[in-house]
Every structure is written in structure tokens, then in C-alpha cells.
Length: 242
Ligand code: 5GP
Image 1 (cartoon, protein in one colour):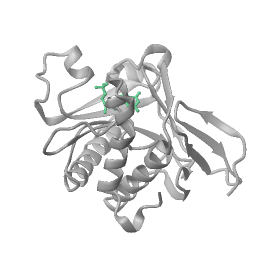
Image 2 (cartoon, protein in one colour; image 1 turned 90 degrees about the horizontal axis):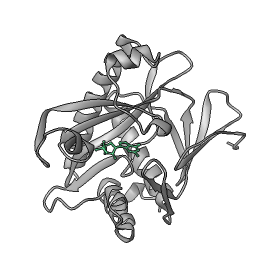
Image 3 (spheres, helix red, strand yellow; image 1 turned 120 degrees about the vertical axis):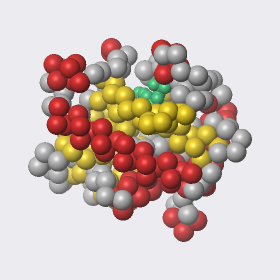
Image 4 (tube, helix red, strand yellow; image 1 turned 180 degrees about the vertical axis):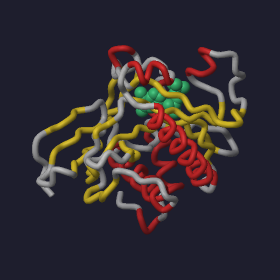
């Protein structure tokens, strides 16, 4: 399948049209950014590691009844996906209090959040992704109440599936960000990616950080080793393509 015109050039992925109007090619680039894109570095093979990890996760979710946009991964950093009209909400699910949650609210760092918190942020760098609520989402015309409930239920189900998936690999799923979109029939599907870029992942025993937080903290030299550690733990040898 050939790339046609560039539809969207994101901070770390580029989306291209294809011959098929219902499918896109998503190229996972080697860029790593932090602070709404203010800091940017290139990390060897980062795009491929994220695309392969995301593919594995999307397949696990599909096997558990969650529809995703994933179709195929013909090359390590090239994904073919259903074309979606993305909903500009970052759905964040938190199992353990850390990050912006403890900067903004009186939660103790590392405390378990039971039930998990589902948070929705407006995906808009120019406004620094402010937190939304149901009224704001409806007033902005982003989603209906029914759609907000679908997003919440899907997010909680995804959290259940992935908490177990990562636990089996000796990893705690602390929190993560997901995005959804609508296909041509209006169905809401999971889109974008699920990778160490948008998840906080801690080693279950040592609590060592295995995700992009290392880059956010300026530990650039450690970040790819963490991504490779996640790759080695969650991708079976028979599925390793790099
Ligand atoms: P926090 O709000 O604590 O900074 O982030 C919560 C979770 O959502 C973390 O796992 C973080 O990686 C993810 N997250 C929040 N905003 C973004 C974003 O704009 N991009 C990415 N890749 N992940 C995000």
C-alpha cells in the first residue's frame, strides 16, 4: 500500500492517505517530545518500538472485545489503520496517584486509586490540554453525553485488560492516555497508540520507571533502554521484528 498525501503531521507520528479512502498509513517517527512539544530529540528506533508495542496491545484489546483502528503493521514503524475522525479528548486513566494529579490535588504520591480515576483533557497544545468536564465537552460540541459515557466505559474496560496484561510482564500500569475516533459509520473506536510514550509503567518489584517520564525528567540517555525493556517483556520472541 502506497503513501499518498500527508493528512496530519503530529509531534511523533505522521498520518498519510492511501488508495483506500477508509484506511490511512500511520508512520511512527523517532521523535520524542515533552512539554507540549517544546523539547524534542530523536531516539534511534523509537518509532518502531512504539509501533510494535502498540500493535501488540491493540491486538490484545481486540481479542478482549475492544474495537481499535489497527489493521496491520507491514513494517516495524508503519501501521495501516482504519481512518477515524479523531475526538479531541485525551482520556486519562489513573490507577496510582502521581504526575499532574498530585501537583493539582491533595493525593499522596504513589497511593492507589480505587476505583481508578477517568479524566478527560482537551487535546489542544495551544491551550496546554486543559481538563474538561461533561458540561465543557458538550458546550464545546466535542461529544454528546451518550458518547462521554461510551468513552468512560471503554476506558475502564481497557484499563482492566491492560492492568492484567502488564502485570503478567512484571509491570505496574500506573496511568495512561488514550484517544478515540469515529469510523465512517459513526462507531467509536480506540485510535492513536498505546506505548511507553503515553503510559506510566513501573517495574512491579523495583518501581523503576520504564516510560517517557525519564525523558520528561531529562534522563535522555536512559529512555530507550526503558522502552526496549518494555518491548522485551511484552513482545514474545516469535513476534519480535526488530
Ligand atoms: P499527567 O496528567 O500526570 O501528566 O499524565 C497522565 C498520563 O497521561 C501519563 O501516563 C502521561 O504519559 C499521559 N499523558 C497525558 N498527556 C499526554 C500527552 O499530551 N501526550 C502523551 N503522549 N501522553 C500524555
